[in-house]
Length: 94
Figure 1 (spheres, rainbow, N blue to C red):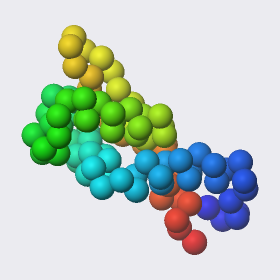
Figure 2 (figure 1 turned 90 degrees about the vertical axis):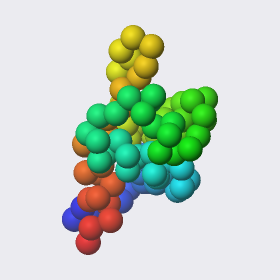
Figure 3 (figure 1 turned 45 degrees about the vertical axis):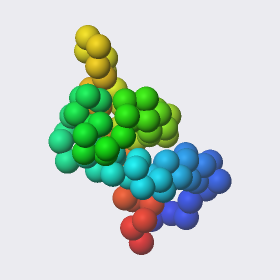
C-alpha cells in the first residue's frame, strides 16, 4: 500500500490478522494455502483436532474472509481467498 490505512480499511484487516493470531488457525490457514484446496476431513489429523474444532476454526477464517468453502457431499472443501491474502501482504509492505 502506498497510502496510509484509513479507519475503514483497517477494520477488516484487523479482523483478518486477529483470526490468524490463533496458532491453530494460522496452521490451518497454512495447510489450506499449501494445498490450494483441502477437504475439512483432511485437516483433522495434521492439526490433531476434532471435526467440531476444525469446523470452528475454519468458520472464523471464513468469517474474516481469508478462506472460502464449497460443500461437496458431506464435507466442505476450503481454499484461500487470493485477494484477501494480497490485501494482507500489501498492508505490511512499505
